[in-house]
Amino acid sequence: MNRLGIYVQVPFCQTKCTYCNFHTGVVSTGRFAPYVEAVCGEIRGYRELYRAAEVKLPEGFEKAVVDTVYIGGGTPSLLEAGLLQGMMDAIGEAFAMKEGGASPSPTNVTREVTLEADPETVTAEKAAAWVAAGINRVSFGVQSFSDKELVAAGRMHRRADIYRAAGILRDAGIRNVSFDLIAGLPWQTAESWKESLEELWKLGPEHVSIYLLEVDEGSRLGLEILQSGTRYSAGAVPSDDLMAEFYETACAFLEDLGYHHYEISNWARPGFESRHNLKYWRREAYLGFGAGAHSFSGMQRWANAHDAAAYVAAISAGRLPVEQVEVVTRESALEEELFLGLRQLDGIDVGRIEREYGVALHTRFGALEAAGLIEREGEIVRLAPARLSVSNEVFVELMR
Image (cartoon, rainbow, N blue to C red; front, top):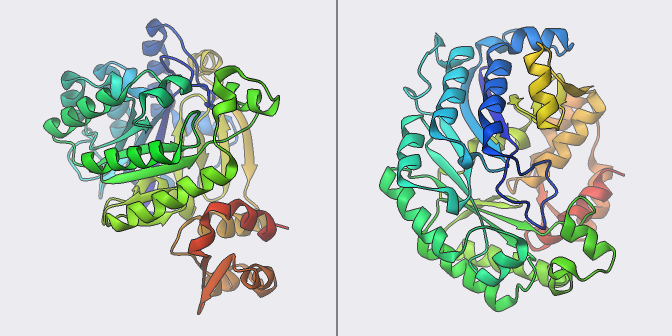
């Protein structure tokens, strides 16, 4: 193991979006600093905390060089710049940041350092401080360029804020910006979706993520839809068929603009694929810090408890509030190879997987190939390009 990703969870927001099913909350700003102090404590003391929580790291893990850092949430751009700098300093002190050992400065080598941000939280002062802290990639929760859709979703920003914030980031020297859009927001139409895509094109982000609206009981909007209610504009949510059409429209539009569709929900200009997120899909090692953060060592997966206050109390008491530690068995590793691998449009190398796991996979793919859901090219199996919008059906069948 020679490369490692670091994820830091900041579970705070200004408001709870109607569609959000994440473990985030709206709290007073006075809770930000104690939380960051706890995160820094976890980062600096991770060896002892893991040992006490019976989390085992492979031999040589501590020598791995951190080549990606992702600060997500929540809305980590709410934090004061000094708090973000403090977390970056802690990472630089605890981990090797360049070949040959640890470095006290996390800014002196080229690595991908991503900050999730909401447009309305961006200021010129913050952007300059982010760059100084080593942040060189910003992932924007744009979701839509339609003010009507943004209001219905409970977002704080408006179309004008997106343009203003994008200009600030470019002026600050950030040359790697990602935009998120959601297909399926209340009041979204084919026309408004195309308008959002065209607005995105005008701003020219290096990376784009397109997500379909998730309908489940974990969000206020999802629960309202499941209960056939009318709050949160639940009756104005597009049908599943329309959402699939929106997704397919985005695929064609972004391809025409020269974006590389490298994962089901993600497109990038050449060379701007999310190096950190690729670690998840390629089953590479990453450590997560903060309330609700997940980690993967290759041998185990584990997660911290989601409640931020309980997390701070536990770290302050010198223990890691691990919610679950799961040993990755050979069987579960194989399922992850298939499920996560097929999310990438390059597909999976079936020959490699069969050799490494000592299994025969042709029986799993035959029916899917006959149904036109996957395609094969020698040893490579990938999702059929025309069936990406129904990828979940493929995964369900594959795991039977």
